Length: 318
Image (cartoon, rainbow, N blue to C red; front, side):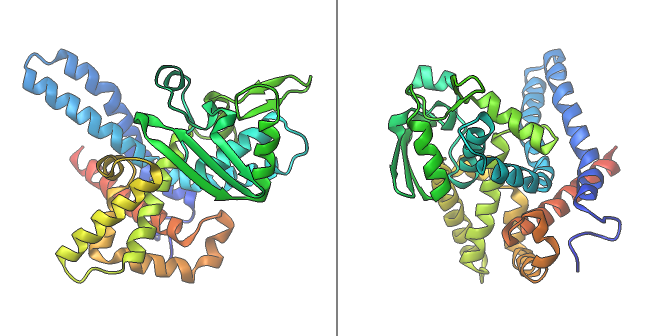
């Protein structure tokens, strides 16, 4: 069995055939539901529309996941190329931030949060938030909701570039030098613009966390192994969600609802997660050029099937 059904020949087909109708319908709903809620005379009906709106917005985020997976190779290749540039130009420093979004799972940062709450992300970090020891990086900072984070990683190239950034004048960590030699700070808009220009679609830094949460869930559940009964399955899922939440720096309930696609938990329960992972390992040569790991392959396949079923149900209901 291959990655694609008989009617699908590429990852572009996955997006256009399995997601396009559903995604468009969901976007239309997110535009229509607020108007319907405002027009509703009964409080219960208004609340129902608002609840539906929140659920639909969550689904829209997950519907983007396959499209984001197809764009990952483009993003990763561009980042690798920019990291090899000489000097300390804008794209090179943005590439560091994007690499850290994916590998360190640190949020991109928000100026308002930094000013009002003293909570930080990559683009709002100060020099004091990082310690560099040779090839090792340790980020220690206060994040969203006041949580204290310590993130450690080893990467010779990143450590060298971050060290150069820290040595620039000023207290902001991620800064670059423009063509005139001026020191400029990288902001979240710069990062999102870079991702958009490279991937060619309306992706943002937030997509990395949704993708990472789901991929991490696959790894955790794979390591847990098949559950012999419902009790063991529930225990394994709870533990996996807890571990993913710890890596993302979120609460388990938030992680399960917003960062782990429900199709992954369903696949663990019916055992298809393991057969899909095994097929990914066997067919690695066929898709490795796309820059996907076996776990990412599993996410693409499982989520595509789930979204295709939703699209079929939507067509039947319409």
